[in-house]
Image (cartoon, rainbow, N blue to C red):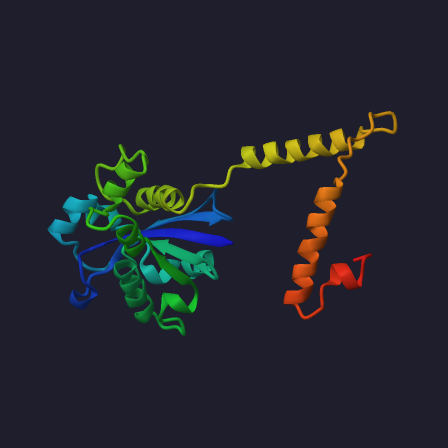
Length: 239
């Protein structure tokens, strides 16, 4: 199972005002284990960044002056996420921006859903923790995920934090160590079983006494009566 945890930073809050993506960060999970596979790009938005947005992520127009536009990295991005399940916190925001960027391209793909499925961790968190704050910072605190480096929002950092939060919220990351310990225990048990030889002490056999046999026969008769004389233990003693 391949999942991609994704976050974006943007020039502002709404595509209705022509705002664009300026950073994309993705980390990969394979069978609920983090890999070293990452996708991280800064994007020149071809418009000014709102002052309020700069206060959130610290990315300025000058920092993006020499970065590629979305059209130049779209193919690499789509190849990275293709066929995966995207894990996003407040997915409508990021998906809305991705779909907007794709719609501006001269190509057949106009929706991220044409390439991926999407899992939104925000409603999951609200279900698990009703009436509580469920921002990424709040979830990091709740699940003991270290977010001390998060002075500002950043797409790659936030994707890495969300990956840890998602794994904690849904049962934790599978442990290679525990798997190996379980395998070692299984091999040990098999070895112990194989080592039992013909010289071992005979097993103790406790046989039913006459009272237990009589009670068993009465129980079988009651089953036979209830089943319309179709009790296999009576009609087929060898069963």
